[in-house]
Amino acid sequence: MKIGKRLLWVDDEIELLKPHIRFLAEKGYDVDTATNGEDAISMVKGQSYDLVFLDEMMPGIGGLKTLSEMKEVQPSLPIIMVTKNEAESLMEEAIGAKISDYLIKPVSPSQILLICKKFLEGKRIEQEHASRDYVQEFGTIASSLLSPMGHEKWITIYQKIVGWDLELDRHRETGLQDMLGEQKRDANNAFAKYIEDNYTNWIHGGNGKPILSPDIIPEFVLPEIDNGKTVFFFVIDCLRFDQWLLMEKLLSADYTVSRRWYYGILPTATPYSRNAIFSGLYPSEIEKQYPEIWMKGQDDDNSRNRYEKELLEAQLERLRITMKPEPKYIKILDPEFGRVTEQNISSLSNARLVSIVVNFIDMLAHSRSDSDILREIAPNEPAYRSLTQSWFQHSWLFRMFQTIAKLKNVTVIVTTDHGSILSARGAKVFGDREASTSLRYKYGRNLKVDDKHALFVKNPGDLKLPNRGITANYIIAKEDYYFVYPTDYHKYLNQYKNTFQHGGMSMEEMILPVVTLRPR
Image (cartoon, rainbow, N blue to C red; front, side):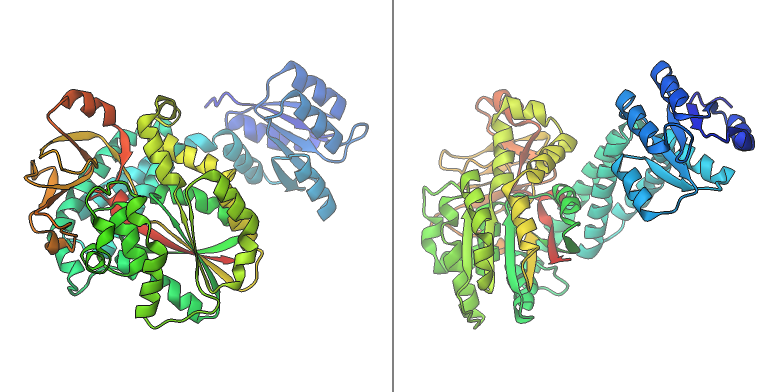
């Protein structure tokens, strides 16, 4: 068995390590040896090595100095410090010098082999295990999709799919991404049928309904306030679960994380879902109290979400909750205001409830649809996730979370009003000129679309949607379809293919995390 990996073992007592070296040779590794730092540095300059075992105590140049000079020659070379010295200060010095791992003498052959496999074969072994485990999981998920499932089981299925999406993204050489993509499409097909069969019952108070958008504040936010905490309540517009997981990793150093779930209402679009969160009401109920929100001609999200502060205050009043000082509400629509809010975030902690709406992810999704540059930077879901992570890591929002983590007696709750889906298939829709322009849902007169591609809502009241004062129907896209009119059909079909959209019925848009962050 020839692995084709070359090792260098540096130790002034190398003769005593011959059994270990023979053992590694039997396992397929080529091992060169050196008895001092000077020779080792020279060998690293003249030969490419995959891994170095380096004694810490040697005559002449010591292990740490040898380590430093080797790193100058090959910065990415994995170097394992081997020493009898268990002093904590030495360990810290070695870590600071970017040692890859640390072994205490005497070392056993199995320890050495484990290190070799970890650094030299780890990626291959992980890929093999990921391939094996996903193929097994594929069968389990496929079997579940053929059986009746409740809303909790669907959350579990979605978590598994997203988890595998991230795992296989790390192991693209497995070639299983297409297989997962097909399974995701099958799952969304079954999910759309499930929502079509159950959603009306949910919103009319049927037994066994999940937590929905209007339940967010009573279910998650108010209990924390009752516990005497100052609650920072973040609603990050258009945030997907996979994007959140990458953000969560960055926050885990400052917070303990507890994750729960809810289902976003239909359409999964800001005027409906976010207004429902802040009001505690369904859109048709909001229409009765705030008819101006649904006035004809208001087709942009910002104009229909101008009353979130008032809706929140009305919900708290309806629940007979009085807070002193009064709740704060902030909507961040641009980076400059985000930076200003970051600088002032500590001063808000005297309030019992601070609600902060962040629009950047939604802006990113829409900008990507219209920008060739952003599409090139983020051509697919893995790249879109990576772009989100990069932004967050260097953003005022991340710094804001870090500042809040240092405050006393606070809890942070993070959620979103809806997610988004990569829209891959066009659905031809017919309607009059007054129909709305959204790509995943529409309202208007005489709308027609294939019912395989969309849910047709003849009576808006059935889904607790606003009538808007006209005889209007709604259509809500299923799976990954997006609506295209017959006029210039192919032009718009191509223009919006593989863009991130929201408003429809998919796991990505409807199954949403509610995360409680507690400062460590």
